[in-house]
Length: 118
Length: 116
Image (cartoon, rainbow over all chains, first blue to last red; front, side):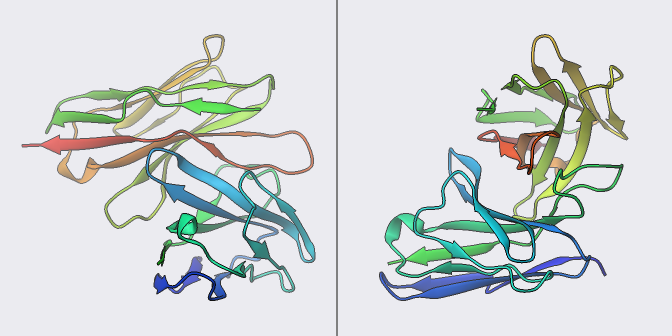
């Protein structure tokens, strides 16, 4: 089954304790992206990757790191989490860097990770 | 910078009725795509419908249709014969198709409640 998986789905942690949220896709997609969702703000892009070893900042990259060593994986790293990073996080992938090239070639979202930083 | 505005934070509709969710956007690009995503209580992001800017014909998917007004930069979603399962948060989103990379720019969402 074609899908984007994220782990963990839920995480409660404390300020300053490094954590990694994993993201994996099995569709051989080139483009992967991380978003955070906050009430009243919608979803905002954190980082994206156009291919292996190619990453760039989105709209809200502060406090986050990413890596793309393999095509299928795109982990999100919080080196020193703070309470303002409490949010719902989504990983997404698409075949093309332009997100849409043909019917059905849209961006696929993972199930989300609910992160609470105390 | 592209922006997407959803001016209705919450809406309610009775089952079997029709409801329209509003979305406006701002861009200087001529080629782009617009989307409506549904987020039910499960939090999964589900693509409902998409519209290519170069197509004048409004997209439809079963009970879901859009009213795309390119000159007015408006992209509303109409849900006909509303069902209880349509209860969800709905996000309007935009992406351009030029440049070296793309992203989805989302609106702030409209929470739709379908009632008996």
